[in-house]
Image (cartoon, rainbow, N blue to C red; front, side, top):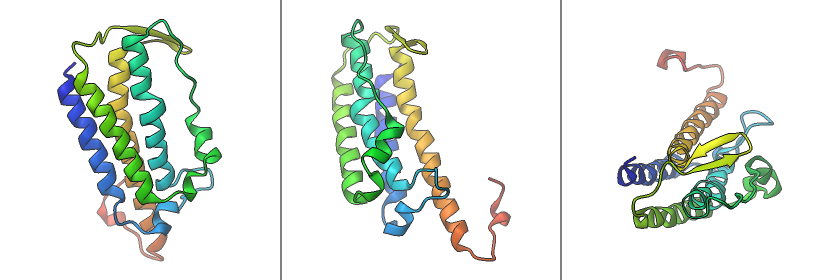
Length: 169
């Protein structure tokens, strides 16, 4: 696994996420497509949580303390408990980007990680390399989610017009 290459992808993903939400209105970032779906602002704060409490932390445990139990996480509950839709977008993006930068600094310091190191999670074994791969692709899931939320928001504003001519989603 090429840690330098995928670290660069993590950096690029963070910049893409920031670019996707910059200059959006307050209405756009707090808009919910359905009552049980996340808003863009909730997605950004979820990414900040994941950067602090999930992927880098759990990867550190796997590489340095494989015998220790991971700290528990509850990303879905945190969104509502911490009122993420009430937060400021600018602050939320800054928090995420700052935490990602800390993660990238740490990744840059790792020397020859054991990607084969396994952890016995509640669902089964996971390797450190699997965790790193999941971290990189987790960003892509949320990039897709943000793009779809923007599309649905625009669709809600088109009135009687539709965008089907653009292509199938």
